[in-house]
Image 1 (cartoon, rainbow, N blue to C red):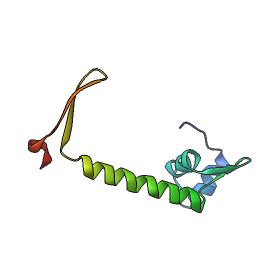
Image 2 (image 1 turned 45 degrees about the vertical axis):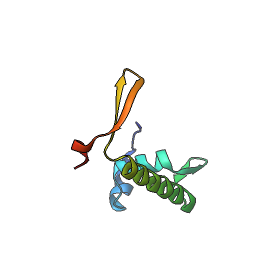
Image 3 (image 1 turned 60 degrees about the horizontal axis):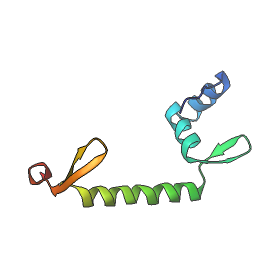
Length: 84
């Protein structure tokens, strides 16, 4: 996400230990109320649940491979040599 920072925002973020990436995360993942963007408890719970789902899915699919021709999946298999 592209956005600019005012000089005031740069100073305040530095004082509060926030990086531009932190602001980007809040803008992308947070809630809003008018011009204000923030991470609520519900936002964090939703992000945490999604992260857990990603980890579970990644572990389940470790060592699995698919062969594609463009956007067509041709076959799927257990890739034992890449499992290690």
